[in-house]
Length: 239
Image (cartoon, rainbow, N blue to C red; front, side):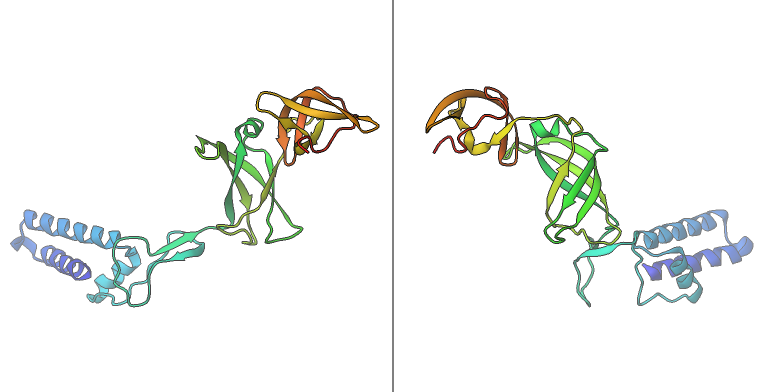
């Protein structure tokens, strides 16, 4: 390709210096050939400065520096020294100064989350440290296997501590703060049609109470109706 470019430059120079012996059609053809040669050089990644060097020296470059289109960190390397290059990805470069984190939420939880909300990330790689970010996008598609929604969050990462394929826990605040009555998840005996909690009457006596459950928070379940705060209950209904 470089030799074709040099030949096109020679043809263009000959057409320019040929005077009246060269017809306008020949000059136009030489211009077109040089334009095509430049486009091929550009498609291969040659910079304007490199093309100027080749054109001035009339010699092809044996080693051609390739400049990355962005600054960042090489996270994948697909070639070895001496390997013949073919069309495809040579390096994968990522700007890790800002990273995306994806979190899976139940559809019920996702309804209370809005873009722009604050998110806190805790990663086991950095005990005791938290990272603050924001909700970027709630992706519209539901996972067919888990029935969960994926939420994408954005975190500034100036120290480059957060890296691809890390994992952790995300804390999101919905902003709809209110007091909730919750019980241990094991305290609720769920038959599929009804949910029951056993209230302690004292003296070894318990009585079943039908309850209506709400959201789940880790190992605890919200109780909407059926029992009141302060009542003693059996912590493992099935047992």
